[in-house]
Length: 291
Image (spheres, helix red, strand yellow):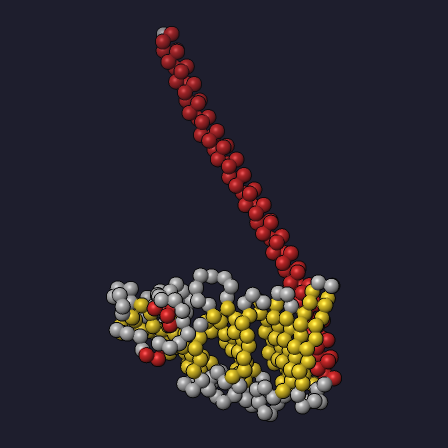
């Protein structure tokens, strides 16, 4: 009888311990989860605070730059009756924020109209504003903002083959692994002298005579696509994409859609890349050989 009591007691104690153990583990697990969550919350709080400070600084810079633009427009308005002019001045705000402003007025895009181009260069940004002179005042037709770290240049040229001079801003991405030479294109409307929305292209080579844009998309060398677009008035139509055939080394596929656009992409096998692509910017990258 005593043996039975002892065995029962031991069994009861083991049963109690077996119930208690999971609760202890659960408590430890909860504590670890709480600790991890606290760390995540702290990191997120720090991230949001940094973002808030950056946004606050950007707002302050925007106000500073707006003041400089107002000054530039006042000076330009005083000289609006001149045939052409180039004016440069430097502004110092809060003793540490310097902005260099260069503004020019001339018939840059069309003999029918005069345009004012204002470049403002600050410690972090390049701001470009284009105005058309109409009824003896300036009307804004383009505004473009670019980081000082990415801005390359801006040019005036006919890019879509309609005989009109367009405005292009060239910039190079400062994040990411791969070839990333960008252009923002603003097309001139011949009838009223204003410009289209911005069209953005990556690694493009423009052929105004053919009304085509050929280029290399973003991606690892030897693994990305060639593209060909065609200007259609103020629209851009896709002509084709060419990309490596992963099943046949040294061969390629052609389609009017990207290979991952959908499961029903119709592809044509080609043995070599058409010669029209072989002199474009980034072709070596497409082949996996670099620039």
